[in-house]
Image (tube, rainbow, N blue to C red; front, top):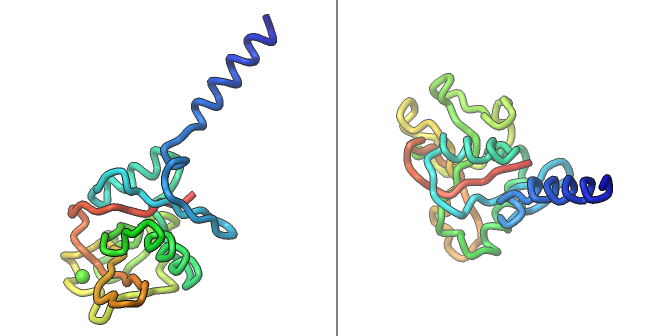
Length: 155
Ligand SMILES: [Ca+2]
């Protein structure tokens, strides 16, 4: 009887651990794993809520290495013409961008030329393939938080 209960408990634990992110494209870094939210498009707030619901955060990109790993993942999935929310925003202080995912100010940055613009109106940070040309390269720009895009979570 005890063995049967143990098996049932283990099955239930494994069922609980089967999260959507297991089926989402991901890349593992030294200290974090980036996971592409490509099942649906969402505004920035919904993207953040989805990541948190699944035990993750909306992604904070803290180095060139992390940025390039995410870009490579997006390119691998032929999604380089799509846009992806990351956790950068200036909702607390207009013009003063920080990561909602970890509370830190932006240190590494990869803004497109003239971005961030529309300070006070466009307050959330998107990964963007502007003028991508032949190079597999994505830039950051600030955009309207209520627009719907794919997104990047991290855990
Ligand atoms: Ca902008």
